[in-house]
Image 1 (spheres, rainbow, N blue to C red):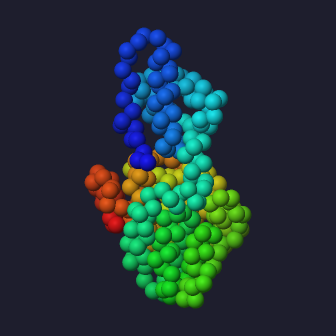
Image 2 (image 1 turned 90 degrees about the vertical axis):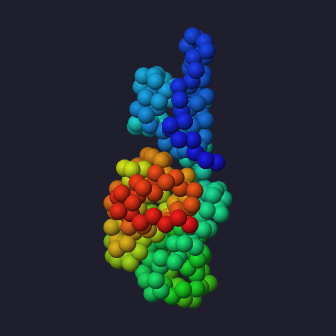
Image 3 (image 1 turned 180 degrees about the vertical axis):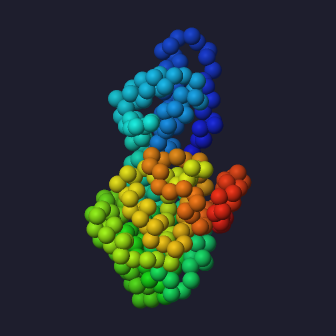
Length: 271
């Protein structure tokens, strides 16, 4: 499902002066938005819906009571979108054909004999599938990525160790980070939940430290993300665009985002 952009959230037409009706219309719009993205910003909602932040806060409190979302500092997290972000099987089915093309295009950027950091994520798994059989050294904190190479004799795989995050099969925590401190990689391939002009963001606060450390340990950073990740601002800022060397996405990316990446010196490849 294509995520509705914030620009589409226009104020509801006031056909009735009843505060109850206006509240119901606003909350319906909020439910629709929360069904498609994991984080909404209170200040932005206030401007777009032309109501005070206190009104938005009351709406979010009401939706939290009914189980639609969880309020956090600056906005709210969607339970539905959050649940999808924490389920590798469900994630792997979303935009699958786009992810396959991204995986194939990204594999062409990798040279034989390189040491790769492959982060967690369904798009990174598609990259791994296109690398199987090539002479490479791979370091990963992703169980699904490691499984791609389990019977591949040409790829040397090292797992970081650490706590296993359930359902998405990612390793994280102090043990993982200590291992990353000891390595140096030619290339990092990493997926991301959100990409805006401000940079990369993700909804998983537990893994943000590991993601930042991976960026530090690689000489070249390649981000893989389908076009639906653009314009999404998730809960936690991970890194500015200036820390990215290349971004591989699908051909449905709007031209404005390609121009944004070029302006930041990021190579953009459309698969």
